[in-house]
Image 1 (cartoon, protein in one colour):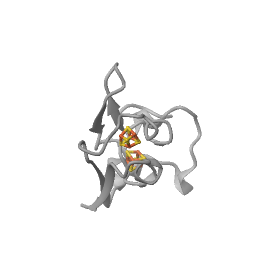
Image 2 (tube, helix red, strand yellow):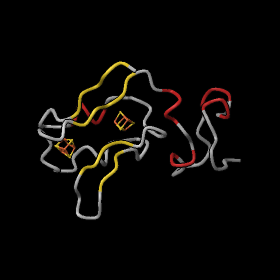
Image 3 (cartoon, protein in one colour):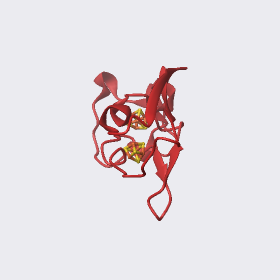
Length: 94
Ligand code: SF4
Ligand code: SF4
């Protein structure tokens, strides 16, 4: 059963995800060895990075202004940096 504040060590053997829609319950930031950095001067706030993030870790306000990342959730996969058309996200070593 999935509960609040589960970490990577609490995942089932093999990493099987047994229930959908549960990424917010895992602190997947523990997995990260690279972190995304938001370059605000390049960002056009197009929100293209938000939907592909598998951990719902991109923070934005109600007016769709990109504000940064929830590093408790961000696992450092780099998808957001790949999809950003304006190179406004850089992946840096932790
Ligand atoms: S995709 Fe790039 S430009 Fe668009 S909101 Fe995200 S960081 Fe900003
Ligand atoms: S690197 Fe980007 S896409 Fe991947 S989990 Fe972190 S914020 Fe989401």
